[in-house]
Image (cartoon, rainbow, N blue to C red; front, side, top):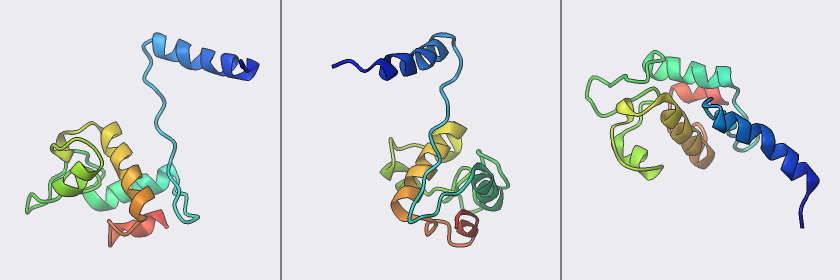
Length: 114
């Protein structure tokens, strides 16, 4: 069964992908009634890593804009160095982590996501 609205809804996305434009970012996650805004996520990144997607903690354990450790990073996708991943990939995994565990993975800076 074909739905007329579906055919029309796909046209702009197809044109966007064929035009070489980047795909839109994933929707911002919600958990337990908390739906942080883009500005809230920016505040979290600023608090965790000065907004720097390539940041590495002094100990070297926490990496990237959201200060992932490698074990948590690997739990949400292929293993690797979070600080070497693209901003979009870091955002995607941080959103997934938030959906699974809320603001708890960021004990101090998670207050920006409440």
